[in-house]
Image 1: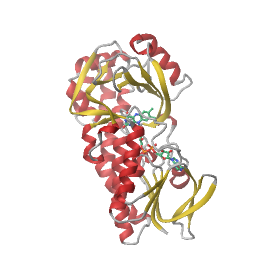
Image 2: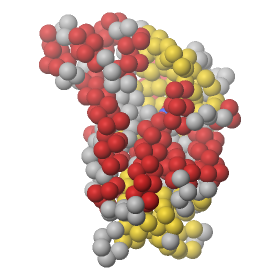
Image 3: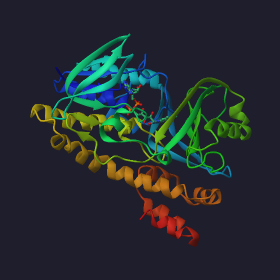
Image 4: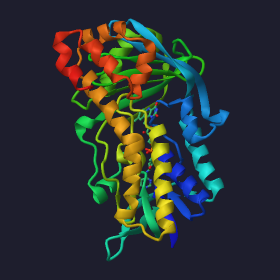
Length: 387
Ligand SMILES: Cc1cc2nc3c(=O)[nH]c(=O)nc-3n(C[C@H](O)[C@H](O)[C@H](O)COP(=O)(O)OP(=O)(O)OC[C@H]3O[C@@H](n4cnc5c(N)ncnc54)[C@H](O)[C@@H]3O)c2cc1C
């Protein structure tokens, strides 16, 4: 029997594996995709400050460096929010493999093309391993603890903890990687508009010369994301003149943070626990942090030979204290912004300072935003939600 088996080799799974392996535990990570990191389902944006958690990211994982974000109001006016530390557009296919290699170097074992089809459970109600399939052969792997780092779309989290993403708490996304497009190259471009992307936004993330990830996320509805993309293209010939070299689709949670992420012998981390920033849908940093935090607590529990729900619950407490309460504030911001009309968004972009935008996305200084909204009596009630 090994110490820990991890389902999913995204950033949450491999960062959890690395920490556990560094602490001397035997760890296996199973990934259902034939290639780790591919196909990418990501705009690939990450702040440079995230390296405080991820570690120094090698140059081969970075497609382009960013100065900040250009935020467009529905009327086309924009403001430039410059990040002090800057940001990256990654090559997720390279980045996710690098994270896996880091875990392997630390002593973990990682296996692609391996689908985990079910979990093992003992008579006392403890999860004790996984059942899976590799190259047509079924197998079982017994472990002292099972970590579910499957992302939001796997049924395991629902089967074990009843966790799922409510339809109104996911954004449905489409993204084209395009070449031969024109844009200001060292800024990410974010277009706010209830017409172009209800509840979400359109993004153009430059990825090298005349290349970009062009995508949008919307509240799920009858009109599909691809149809919204066509509308965006009509208004942006500098983008639509390009060619599509890759298509990515997926959903990203924008709420539904989970209070209880553990049970006997089982831990949920990363996007599987809806650990995503609810305002911009960025989940890489949150996945890394929660994978690492889970590993710290699991390591302590393994040392004490106690992987009960009570012992593992320290992860719930730690995560909520460090990240959950903060992301909850960001969720309030998302709930507030989605109630605004395009005219309100125009006025907001005119009224705000660029540096405030960055703070808002971090869940900070929301009282400043509330004050700006309260200038319109109609929005007082909406603004109160932020206080
Ligand atoms: C269109 C789109 C754009 C995005 N853009 C950004 C962005 O620009 N920046 C950002 O920070 N975030 C972005 N995100 C979110 C980000 O990609 C995720 O939040 C992040 O990858 C979550 O990491 P994770 O390790 O928790 O899960 P994942 O990266 O989803 O990894 C989970 C892994 O588990 C595997 N798995 C699932 N079930 C099984 C099973 N039964 N057996 C074996 N393996 C299994 C999956 O194949 C997958 O590889 C975007 C998401 C989407 C959909």
